[in-house]
Image (cartoon, rainbow, N blue to C red; front, side):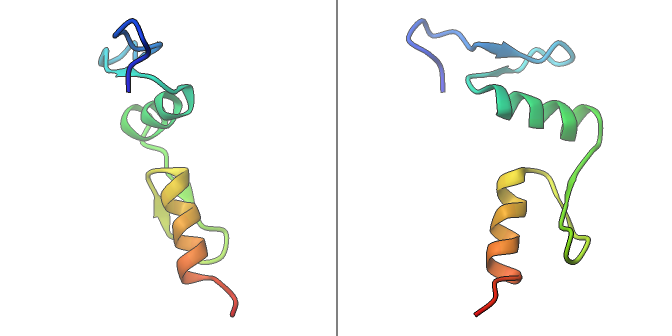
Length: 64
């Protein structure tokens, strides 16, 4: 998404990709340019976004 001016607020200095939200930009840098992942503390599985990790925990480790 872009703001009202049609410009992104955050740009990656490595690849010049634009982002409207800072947290998405930060995840992009971590995953794409630094090769880092978000790991599940319960099973060790790695994910490319915090949202995917959260969904995994909710779905795969949910206690009934």
